[in-house]
Image (cartoon, rainbow, N blue to C red; front, side):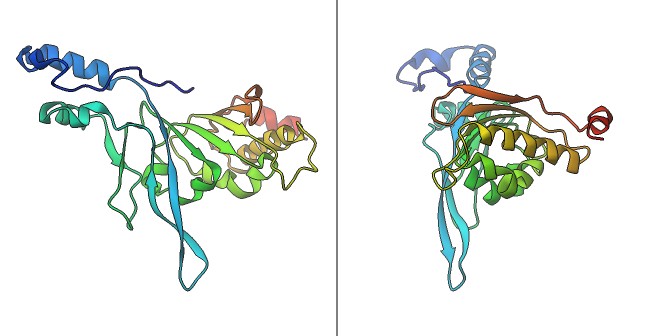
Length: 223
């Protein structure tokens, strides 16, 4: 799923004659660059709300470079803003991350899911998700996935976690698959995303859930 653009960051000094090209040609070049999908890694800074013990997100951050056209020139920025919007903002920080949700894949850890603002949560279409304790993912986080209205693809890097090491290697896959099927059955009409399950350590693909809504045929097989 991860597709990183190899396009070099643009500066006017690299090609000073660029501004002399006809706008139609410049626009085609902008469109070509802006059509490149990215993988945007999201991390966050959590804090505790005193005097309670409730956690909140101070700010989101990323190591993914900003789309280069946003800082090349005023013209390129105008074109880029037709594709990218400031996202992952909080009320506690002015920071934002520019994302094109129709093209970009969001990469984050399971613990961030519950802190996503609805506007970001509902816009994510492709997700790379790191899961520490896959056997308990359904209990703690499945509701967050069900709430993601636009989600179509998940690449899930799943581990069994040190705390729950009594779970035999590979058994977490059975539990995780069962949890997805249960969520589909409990949330009729939920268009479950396609889920590719990767071994969290080895990197091998160990499972695939095609997704889709729970069907009458599946219900009949449960009887």
